[in-house]
Image (cartoon, rainbow, N blue to C red; front, top):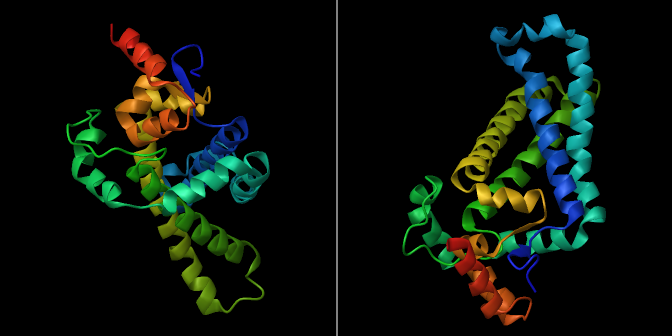
Length: 232
């Protein structure tokens, strides 16, 4: 059954909380690191001291490390479902990227292959962020605690590796932010209210939409009615 006759459940509350905690941690890690990479941002040190920036960076680093682990306890079903989805790659996921340039412009081109709960772009970004998270955590912990135990040669490589991983994660973050805020703003409701309009579900996740109907979670009649009313 649809929520309020037009919305379909998408994310549980624990998953949403962890998503925003992770976003907060990542943004603050990026901001507190900026003065290290460019003198242009040294004016930040007039607001807070370099030592305070270091403490903040390490504090948010802990949050960045803990949040994915916390999500395993707050949203185990969502995390299990997410893990299954990102490794379930088929021909439609590959075809998705042929149409993706138009999708990125906020259009939904004809011929777009039906996507599941997560589309191919979301799956790719998930894999990218997992890889970046692992590299950031390992290299970050090495920089934080490894000075006395790791070889100088190893420590020498940790900074460029850490920076490269941060850059990779930032590119994925910007793409994710743009698509959610500008290209497909209807998707943001899923990470705020936990549900999305059935019209958006059908247009952008049609394979999942059909799955919901097949499983009896919603009826085709109520879904089509809600879509028709929305388009009226």
